[in-house]
Length: 177
Image 1 (cartoon, rainbow, N blue to C red):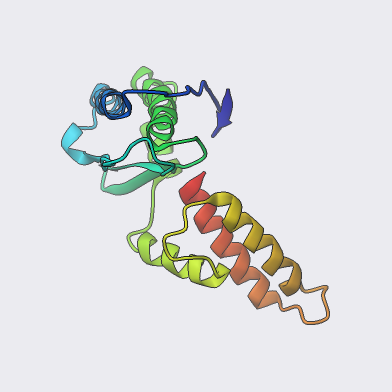
Image 2: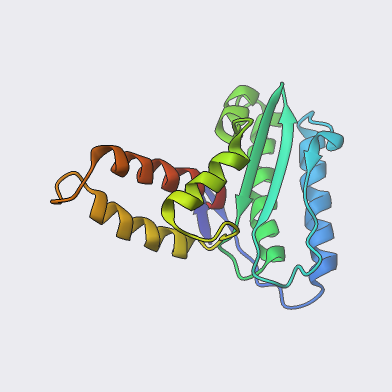
């Protein structure tokens, strides 16, 4: 069990049929969006060629003129990450369909800026991690190291540098959480 964005998600351990299960999860995500009134052609779920590898899963969609995105990378492999996203979005979109959560609130929670890709590249550069680093533990460790050195209470600390490091960490945390 995991708690993500205030929702309890039951994680699964996938041991076989990774591609088939990933396709099933993708189809369930598309159906959840359709049930909430968001057409499947507004949803993008990149397929992974090797879904048994430890890679993040991500879903992007357009709703009411906003670009929205969610990715997850804390499970053992792409298929398990996609399962977590599926369960989260099923719960969120069911609440929207039932009217217990306003669509505007749902969109606001997942909305991304147009230049989010560039901001993520810059955040990785600021933290000194590889451009394609998706391991949150590595990012978090590097953040803590840099934040400690840049903290305004430290002899060589800088408020501006500390803020820049914090913003970079928040940007990547949102992407990978």
